[in-house]
Image 1 (cartoon, helix red, strand yellow):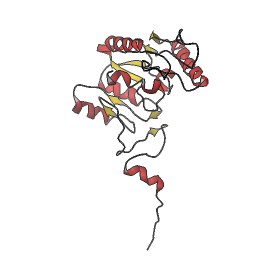
Image 2 (cartoon, rainbow, N blue to C red):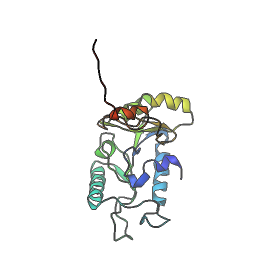
Image 3 (spheres, one colour):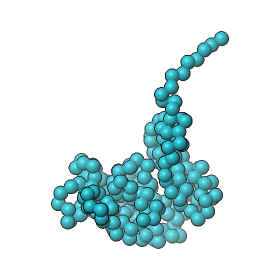
Image 4 (cartoon, rainbow, N blue to C red):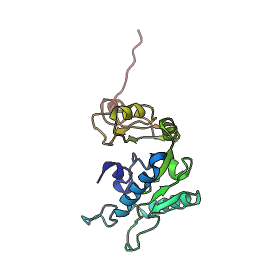
Length: 208
């Protein structure tokens, strides 16, 4: 599976750094929506013990209810569901939610702003690079992100302007040798790398 499609759905959407808010250029918006819709619709939802399963259950019944409440909020806000949106009909036991893709999403909507922790990516349209940076930074969270591009140098230049603790170019794979952590309401401090050792150190200041 292509990384750009799996990145919003890893661990059934229950991962803190997932890119569930997908910014797509207006000129190719329909193409991006169609691609994510086809991918999400092709995924096998099922029990984790099956080797064919690609999307498993939510961790708890309460979490499934939370995810479903966001799906309802998205619909009420005028966003369009292109695939999914309910519980799988063939799974009576377990806390399952169909992979659900939202299109025509206002960046101010709850489904774009909040961390849903479920398989519910939202596709938001942008006009140009400046607009994309504005939308990306218009969030109270800032843990992780990705930039997908055929020009890695241009992607790196854009990534430097996104206010997140971590960001990947055409992938997102945390490196244990590099610091990991967020900005804004995504937390304080860092794990991993030499910066992660600071939490275990006691500093003494001597004045002469």
